[in-house]
Image (cartoon, rainbow over all chains, first blue to last red; front, side, top):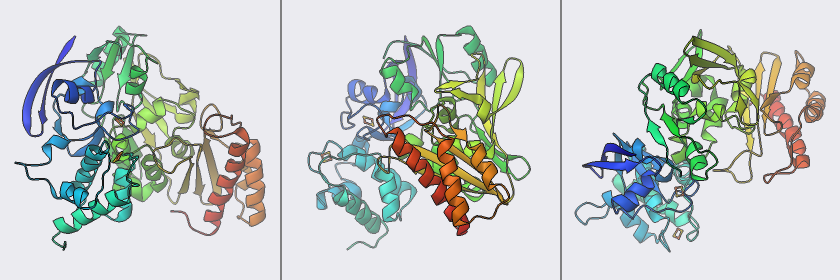
Length: 159
Length: 282
Ligand code: FES
Ligand code: FES
């Protein structure tokens, strides 16, 4: 059976018919071809599938497709506007906060959600915001620094 | 995932009617952080999944000194942890909620879901055990209240009947009560408890609850009796820690051995009581 869902994806309204036994992650990747959101574990452990739903970071692998109805979703594809990267994306590049890049969309979504909610996070608050994101390559320090510097720049204190 | 029918009732009554209609072949979906994994792994294969998240009123989170705290069925871990009333009056409960999973998981996982799952190591269980929280349950015949200790009956078993729904948890407020939550896990974040506990002090009496040491979270009545009306001294704390060890019956599993858990129970009792002795509890 198909379920009609109306939701917003990166500010675009959309109407779809989805199966109950699929997840938001399947819909994003397979139906909408938004493959920036990754599947690592599929079980809420790795954060590669992090998206922002109604202002909050969620694991897209832990939401059933019919639950999308009424949600406002931002994925990694919704960050850059008109080809202009967001400050956080630029800082990830500047700090070399990625290597293989598989975890990066998830970290960017967690970082973006944090800075929207709290423009002046402490180092501990940054760590709390990203504990649900695993990275096998970078060792996390550069990621934390990139988020820290983004906060500084957005507050107007950057060099 | 097998196919199932997804149902989204708009009232508690409607949800109960659906439970009755599909008795034995439906599950309730709340935050979904456990259910979706169980569906995916084929650990459960329901024909109907009943999503209660959009029922107005189940997001209720209220506090007053007279009525205590009421946590609606759909309140998430982060909503509880972020609540000023909870931080001010039940800081150990906020800490327990924040100790669950990751930020993403806590934005979905619910407090009531954590209890209804009835895992022996549920992180939010022990604060409710020491506060003597009460589960508020609705059915066709009206509401009933069940103390949490009678609600969780065994590993993943509760006294909830198949035609009932938990609508919330009521947590009594006790003036001057102070609590200490402890969670020991293999890694600091995004891990299940190897042991969790809450020690509550009300004037000069103590309540101790432990998780992951028995088929359900448990209170430690003998240790509580030993400490009752006494002034804490290093000797008394030592005696209490040793006695606590005899009141638990942990098993060995992938997270830890039985022996390790027994030692850690002692350590958790000792450290919590020492903090009380030094006046350090929130
Ligand atoms: S794929 Fe969702 S948390 Fe790993
Ligand atoms: S950059 Fe490779 S997993 Fe993070």
